[in-house]
Image 1 (cartoon, rainbow, N blue to C red):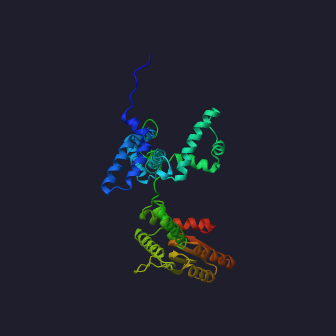
Image 2: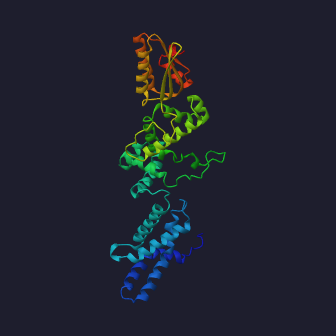
Image 3: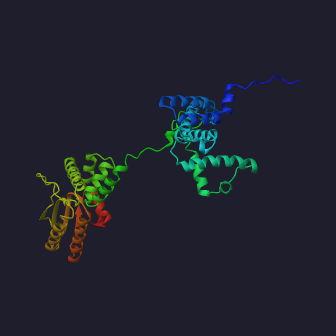
Length: 378
């Protein structure tokens, strides 16, 4: 016994007659006024809406709401109706291609999280489909070479497509790292180096520091790198705290000026403003069978020649007397000053005169000890 006869619905009849309706629409459209053309166009669009909805439902479940896909499909349907030409073939086939193209364009333009060229987008889809097929055939994941052979393209393009696939749904920087803890993915990225812009200045300062006298370099290092106080520095060099303050001010002023000019200004050893704390003075006094030479100030490269000449003259005039050099007033000595003392020692040796040093400040004494003059200390 046969079952009840099924009655075809209006929607099914409409789908079956879609090509015929399109031909009828095209035949009547040409000779109608503008308002009648709009009505005919609306009738055909309404008739084909179920067809567009069926094409849209093929792409559901791919991350886009079905309502959005249906809207895109309807837009493609309207374009197909406006561009339809009966001489080019079936309206159904033409509308299917147009609607499908609009849906794919929507996925390309709206759903990728990162902009990827269209060629790579299409290749990514092909790679995904080929991977599924080859996995079924080989019972394992295909290699890049196998995918390239199946799609007849280069391995470089396959690798680019695989890398581009990650741009479809990129991970959120606010996503958690691991299962526990409040850390986010964005926390794993490094921040901008705030000190990067100061690299040029640091290199420039490093070069300028070598233009400073040894004493000034050492004071800067102790103050800003060793975290010494001005009083500590003054005790180290045997000078006053006020003198240390003036030396720091003068040195920093010179560095600022040198940083702002192409040619660094000449370093002036005097501090000016009536301060003579670093101006070297010498006194010679004969007493009790000794020639007492008093030296006060800074025995640096500017004063070294004066000390060498003065001590050499004292040695030559000493005769059989001993020459005692009082260094209590010397707060600083550099390589040039040490060389001057060595030269006076050599002159005393040639003249067979005994030369000794007395009351040297700790910093000066250490420098002379390193230079090998420790046996001459009184």
